[in-house]
Image (cartoon, rainbow, N blue to C red; front, side, top):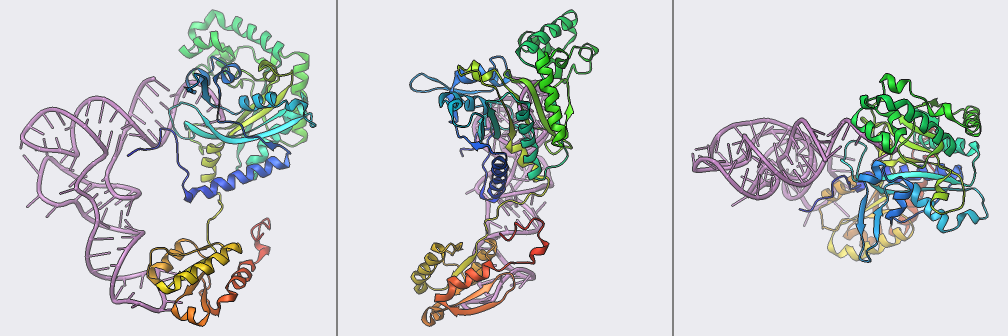
Length: 437
RNA sequence: GCGAUUGUGGUGAAGUGGUUAACACUCCGGCUUGUGGCGCCGGCAUUCGUGGGUUCGAUUCCCAUCAGUCGCCCCA
């Protein structure tokens, strides 16, 4: 038997409703913040990721799905969403659009060759936002507020927003030098990974879980202390906006993030508790003012974030999140061969009229058909046998109340329609009034 | 890339170096060819992830492999 590839998963009909509801909420929050959806290809020229994410990051150095196509071109299945969106932004000259600040979001599968575990797959779904064209800390604040709103809309509480600033290119250079100077004398006391990072990506040493508590790191200089004036005021302003917007956050001076392209603001959203197992990060993002330029675009600043949608789903599983149902309105019970054609005619009319209808295709007994209707969560069952066909009538049973009426077949459609639009309960009980819409 | 752990029907799961692989649920059929959800009766694994080895004999022991789960690394 051929089975799914490691680290992938099928979303079966029984759970797809939750995904659809989740995706719908994400889109609706995106709309409120006025971000527009962009869809880019699932694979790109490999160079895109090497140049943006960073050659020596784990993502690029050991986690990409690469393949050569028949034209000997190097392709990579996208491991993240920012680079493709930036590529598209540049290639489609969106910087010349009527709207000088382009606010985009995307949602779709990403691919990383990793060992799967809780909250981690080889094909996973990310939802992310990217806002181009302004260096204003207002935009950083908006993006963070947007991310928080998504969680709020999903009723995921108990989250922790951590922010930090890496500063601009100048701050980063200055800081890196100081950090290397500080670490140099005792570099051999750090873990093996950190010794490698010393060469490749010294900033990451800061949030190493192994060495975190060593005095060498505790006493290490922090990026925040090496910010240029502009960088410092960018960060201060951001904090001012977040306070004004009533967004809760904590400043984590050791937060650096793994991707190369970040400047200024970086942030992560974590879930408290053990909803996600050992993974707690549900969203990460930050500002990347030099990325567009370094990918041969104009010098345009940008800021964004990415959510792990699978992780959102995992978190939602723990809090009784209601997905879209696939209940049907009417189950048409057909009794007898001679009734089939007339029944199909009826079904077709109902469906054209927008009534979710289904029937049995296996000549099941009445009892078995009732069971089927139950499993489909049918609101009504219409029984259609020989006598009904002769009389031009049909029995309609309300599955909730058990009431049954015999009506003219011609009136079936309007009957079902009226019954369905009747509120099923007292709407004063609705929390938000959306249930009966 | 490293480590731990698991792999028996549709599902959850017992079990043993040796004739018919327990049990529960689901499902199917019947009692009941026109009103189901209850009840009763009956049925559903030539086979224990896959390949190899040890053995007279393996689902049970060993090795490999694949897959799941969890953790490390890293990240969403």
